[in-house]
Length: 77
View 1 (cartoon, rainbow, N blue to C red):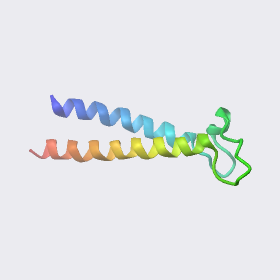
View 2 (view 1 turned 60 degrees about the vertical axis):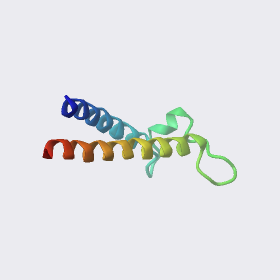
View 3 (view 1 turned 120 degrees about the horizontal axis):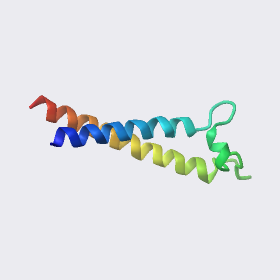
């Protein structure tokens, strides 16, 4: 049962990671520009949208990594 639960979670986190990486701004802009990411502040830093997207990507990436480790430990037994 736990293997199935973590396998489903891994699929969901993997799809979210692909989506979040595609939303990031690349050399020529990104999909995040569609949601206001192209409007940066005059202070020179990243926009609020980019900062929040970075944070969300780090959180989902961490959960993805933990899910892989737990699933590996469960399947090893």
